[in-house]
Image (cartoon, rainbow, N blue to C red; front, side):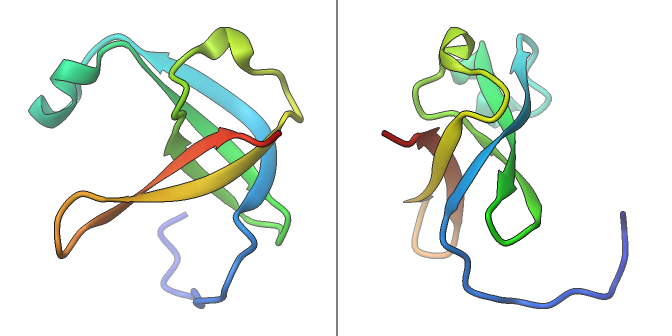
Length: 88
């Protein structure tokens, strides 16, 4: 939404599938080795939406409303990236 009105808060990391897409084209060279990969839009319990790649990388496992949880991977000492996985 490009809004500058934002706030930080601690979230549970739990949510549900809102939608997903399977990427067959690397929009950045850093993702080329991961093609194809699944990206999920997650409705967090706190009422916000976020986007993260699916750890299992298999879209056939997904359905609308499926329970997910967010995990984080340290890419290096300065960058941490979110991932989501099926909860349960």
